[in-house]
Amino acid sequence: MSNSFRLPWHKLTHWEYWPMEVVYFPVFFYWLYLSVRARSLFFFSASNPGIETGGMLGEVKFDILKKIPEAYRTPTLFFAYPFEAEQVLDQLKKNSWTYPLIFKPDIGERGNGVEKIDNAEQALDYLSHCTYDLLVQPFITYPIELGVFYYRYPSREKGQVVSVVAKEFLKVKGNGSVTLAQLVDANPRAALQAERLSIKYAKRWQEVMDKDHELLLEPIGNHCRGTSFRNANDIINEQLVSVFDTLSKQIDGFYFGRFDLKCRSIEELMKGEGISIMELNGAGSEQGHIYHPGFSFFTAVKTILQQWRILFEISVENHKRGIPYMTLKETRGYLRKSKQLRQKYSA
Image 1 (cartoon, rainbow, N blue to C red):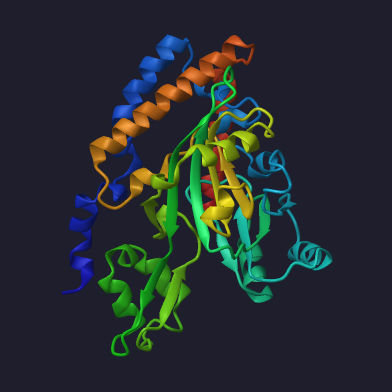
Image 2: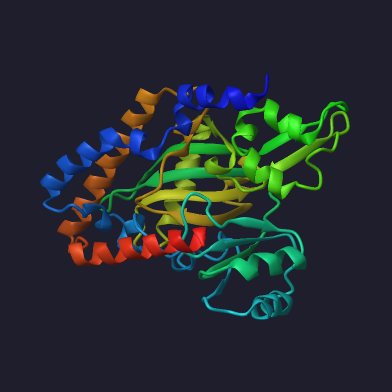
């Protein structure tokens, strides 16, 4: 039986695929409670004074990246829309950058608009449809991709790493007798991406894959793109916390969020070496380990609520130190900006 008949049941019984409105329904009431205590619906904006809205709404990635010490951050080029495709290609040539590259929006969410670009032809195709400020980064080939969630109270010298998620990219392995389309259909995680993958791999869709040949279907480490998130909290120790304490204190106005990075090895990560940070997400980020397959929904909600309590406490502490909460007028402006961006994606 084709997996397409089983996918609705699979999505229903695996909460990681549920709509965010369902997952965050209990959080909505807790946010209201915390807002009453803080006397502001937008208390979270004070969590990271160095990031717009604290990192909850429409924050600019490039501005955040520039705050990360150069030794740790992934090299990034910024192009303000509107721009000409040749302008982008000329800058890549000027900087001696070679493919593959990562193209992504400067303001983005949940992997929208993020693509691995393997050659100039793909770059021109992407740029012909691009209607937003663009970031270009080299594709980092380090073998391990992690999301490390860290926080530190402003009044304390030492912070905490509370979540590490390891990203397992979507791939299939051939057996010499079935097509790529059939392999995708047999894998529920891949089958949920079938419509997009059938376009991406149109020329190979009915090709029979050789036995034991592995094909990486999705190189972007985003849960919404089929990447499997694995709980790697077992690597959290004092050494790891010390690395991120040292790093975070060099980022002006940062106290709460998730580092999305690649590293050469866990051993080097523990020394603060061999690290390339691709993004830093603030108040709106999640502890990615909760999406580990089989992770309890109720434990996940409890984790999210605990995260919001910490977010509230850090925000209030910063507010007492003179950091203002975002106003209703400012919030409306950021919401409009986020809405306009989503419209550009779907254009």
